[in-house]
Length: 81
Image (cartoon, rainbow, N blue to C red; front, side, top):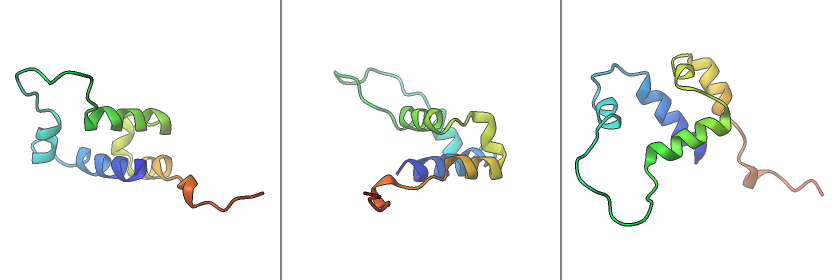
């Protein structure tokens, strides 16, 4: 799931700044949120980026981005014991 989010985020960020998805990522809506702390999609992506040790600048280097975000899903690995 993490790899899919980061792959999509990298794809969108490499698009031109006036692309619809880039505009939506920068959108700030007026008003209040309901009670409790709700997780935004971008918050989860930023957490995923810190876990993979990538930054906003790394998005433009597609080879580096792909190498850093691609990791095996631990639930599909065979049990070694």
